[in-house]
Length: 228
Ligand SMILES: *Cc1c(COP(=O)(O)O)cnc(C)c1O
Image (tube, rainbow, N blue to C red):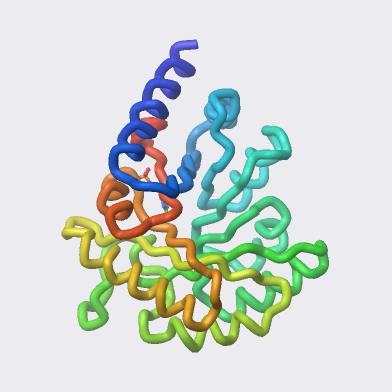
């Protein structure tokens, strides 16, 4: 019961902050439940939360089976080829697509399941001249210069629906320029794939800045569930 009150409080607090930071339309809040138990997902579900994010296939697969069908699952971790079959089964959205070989396999698996897999293209937002370093998440993603050619290739895959761009803000630096860049790249993507207008950006530490730069999907874990 104590945990339920704690989560309810944090969820309400974060939602109020999101309301203050945005104009219509409201962004989609994804609660990142990685490393937290299924019981937390169940509490969130009872509180009305429907969108959940996970970084690992096995964890996401198990948790997604533990809550009712109308929950929406987002995969945002590094994609491993041998996990694609499973990921496509349980995830409604993949946020971390950055490899054409993976894309071809995702498309094939999705078509076999009679679905079109919704995907965000993950873009590396590090300044191009600075060699990437540090955190795992920030290093993933296609190069900014590759966006149009990558999107052109994805368009040929019948089992994939590209819904937008995804980026991870830089660690220990002002995230504003990175999120502004992501907004520009989103417009570029829509030049290739009209309607692919979603922007997945912002985590617990930087979501308010991401919202100022047009984020449509924010991925929050620790600000709602506590430190891992
Ligand atoms: C873990 C993770 C999040 C959530 O991070 P918090 O700092 O806990 O909000 C969001 N996006 C990605 C890609 C992550 O790996």
